[in-house]
Image 1 (cartoon, helix red, strand yellow):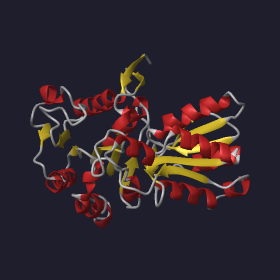
Image 2 (cartoon, one colour):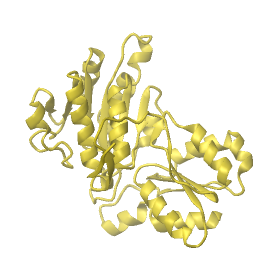
Image 3 (cartoon, helix red, strand yellow):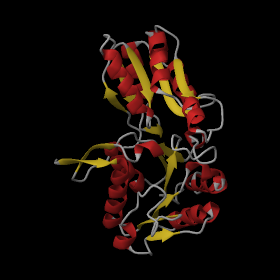
Length: 326
C-alpha cells in the first residue's frame, strides 16, 4: 500500500473525515472545532466539507455537550466529541464516568454508547497547571471505558478509526507535543485493533514499557545506548484499556529487566498497574533487577518553562533509570 509522510494532527483529521464519509451517523462536536479549526488546528477544513450539522461548534459547557454526545450515541449515532484539554474532564466527570461508561452494562447490553472522546493531553507547551495534566489513570480505573494513547501518526489514524467503529465509549488521548510530529501513513484504508501493543524497537537486555510521546523519547535513548552495546526493547502499549498483558509479559520474560515510562505523575500513575501485571505473572520470576518507573514529579505542572521541564520526564531521566538497571 502506498505511503506518505504526514503529521500526527493530519492523521487524526484523516481518520475522522474518512469515518464521516463512510458512515453518515458519525459526526463531530466540541468547542471551537469549526470556524476556529480546534485549539491545535486538527479539524482544519472539516466544516467546509461536512457543514455545521456534522461539525458542530458547542457552547463552553463540557457537561452539556458531553452529555448530549452520550444521549446521541444511545439513540443510534456515533459522535466524536472533542474536549479542548483533557483537564476539562473534571467538568463533565459524571457524564463520562456514570453515564457513558455504565449505560451499556446497566441496560444488559441492549443499549450501546458508541462514542469517542478525543482530547489533547500532557504538558510541554507552557499552558500551566489546569491545561497540562496527564490523567489517563483516572479513565483506566473505570470499567466500561476504553482508553487509547497513540504515539505515532500511523497508530493515531488506525486506532481512531477502530475507536469510532467500537460500540463502547473510547477515550482517545493525544499528547500535545505529538501533533506536529511526522510519520509514514498508508494512503489506503486500514485499522489497528484496540488492545494490541506494538514493539517499536526490538531488544534483548532490557524492556522499556511506555506509551504516548515518551515512546519516541525512549527510542532515542535506546538508540544512543546501542552505541555502547546495550540492546533495549521499547514496547508501545498504544491502548491502556483493554491492556495487552500478554505482550508485556512476553517482553519481560525475554529481557529480564524493566523500566516503565510515562509522562503522567509517577505516584499513583498507570505505571503501577503495569508493574502489578508483571508481579502477578510468571514474568516476575524472570526479573534480574527491580522494576523501575519514570514519570512526572508529584507536582502541578508549572507555567515557568524551566520548572515545567524539571517536573516532566526527560530523556536524561529515562537514560539514568536504564543505566541503573543495566
